[in-house]
Image 1 (cartoon, rainbow, N blue to C red):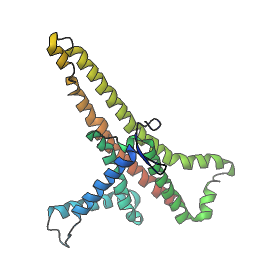
Image 2 (spheres, rainbow, N blue to C red):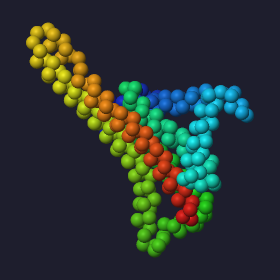
Image 3 (cartoon, rainbow, N blue to C red):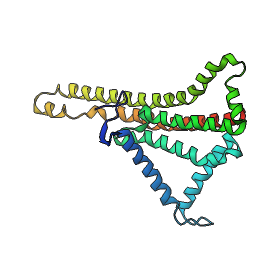
Image 4 (tube, rainbow, N blue to C red):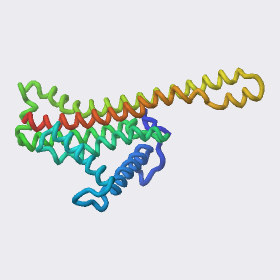
Length: 246
């Protein structure tokens, strides 16, 4: 059984709550990230004495620098959030390499992240401009712009979600088509060999070794990591600009 167009299968149902591959695989990724953080942050010292602590400090400093460089010092508290979003996005996309369903290939995952971004944008607009200033912004530059401003407000996070989803989902579709084509070509070509040898070899998708692996480096690895970076950068840009515009 499939869920809409995403291909995420329903695994089981608990009290009317549908649990899909997306939910399970997302929790697996979160568990791995939590376990990694637990391991590298154990028994930290004032002065690093282990490679594990050096790695932990490097990761923290990298994300702190990234957030401060793009959002400013007053948003330094957002470093854990941005780190979490980037790591979740990248690992969810890369999980497809293991053969499981990549959560970022499910639109519901990206929509949920987009809702978080929308809440952050709204929160910062109200925090720095006041609730009255937030409502007034929908009427600028003239009141007749109200419908367009509302659409623009909602379209910002939604476009982020669809951009991320489109790139990851298209990679999944392309790789599925390539693997299918290579399997069919392998069966057709090797099936031309007469006798039992041809019958045996035609069942082995030998042509799936090579081209699919090369394409996977782009669609599954490079593209997935780039989309994680872009989603995080856009989150920082929209949140910081929401505060600056008020």
